Amino acid sequence: MQSVAQFISQGSDEAIVATAPCRADLAGGTLDIWPLYLFHSGAVSVNVALSILTACKITPQAGREIHLQSHDTSRQESFASLDELLTAKSYAHPLGAYLVRFFQPKGGFVLETFSESPAGAGISGSSALMIATAAALARFVGREIGIEQIRVIAQNVEAQLIRVPTGCQDYYPAMYGGVSAIHLEADGVRRENIPVSLDELDQRLVLFYTGAPRQSGINNWDVFKQHINGDKHVIHNFAEISRIAQGMHRALASEQWNEVERLMSEEWKLRRTNVPGITTPLIDKLIEVAMQNGGRAAKVCGAGGGGCVIVLVEPGVRQRVEGAIRDSGGQPLDFQVARQGLNFSSITKPQAARV
Image 1 (cartoon, helix red, strand yellow):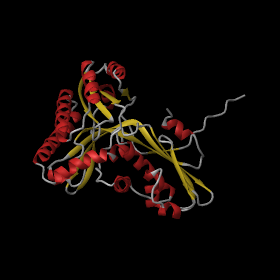
Image 2 (cartoon, helix red, strand yellow):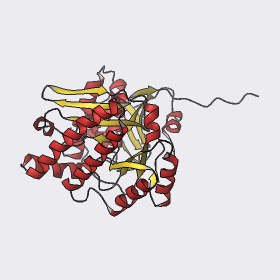
Image 3 (cartoon, helix red, strand yellow):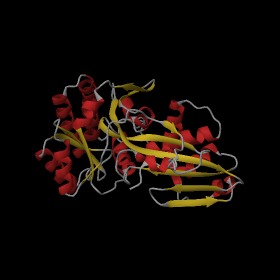
Image 4 (cartoon, one colour):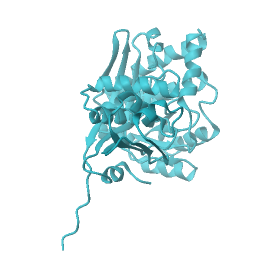
């Protein structure tokens, strides 16, 4: 499969290229959807940025034609002008089209995107790509927009796209990298870097894809409605998830791995009771295999029902766990904790050999 590095290397020197990493959520997911966090004092979401990247490349071209292309999904479309794009009823590349509708660039261009994340993996590939594409378009049209405002634009446009409320936590790993505590308060949202050893985390986390995509918007919307409608069971579970996420923040900051294990297991147990279908027989089987080979705790990424699973393992057994998962039908994903978030890159051409 092509990588983001290969994608970046192909193109014109005039192109604007932005990259942003995906994420794995460790605790407090779904609480980040407004206004759910307002009902749980001290709400926080904890996540880690992954070196699984998304990228957007914009190349100006003469005339007024606009071409949109998603290389990882093999979708593309062209419009004779911005006016034609704005009046279209549907899109082959909706993420690109919706952001073009917002920024409305003048003149012709080619907008290309690429994601290393499997489809529907639950590691916020779409949100990371929204950040990369929004940032690239802002630079392309000459708008100076702060990174926090890029997040607001990306989150709101993604809500228009998927037509259900979106949470805010998915965008922060794409913006900053590292390990984040996203504090969710009445006076706003604030990101705090958690100063845990990233080298240590590289050895302690395994990520695998189940091979089955899921639709996070649907699962989260079901839970959202139940919470807003006053479902006491769901409200109680989210109060517990909020408590666990606050504990996860403290445990990671002090590198108390036994506590990280306990809290991850506790949150997964609670989430399994929130929505039927958050797990599957394959997910349960692969988690059991991981536990038998050095895993300590595991949970699905995102809303579940498929996608990816993150596993906390003993140091030194990562390769063994990945091998056992692979032998049992899962797809381990190669990654490290992403050390940086949103980044603008230059097209890098391979140099010709000297003769």
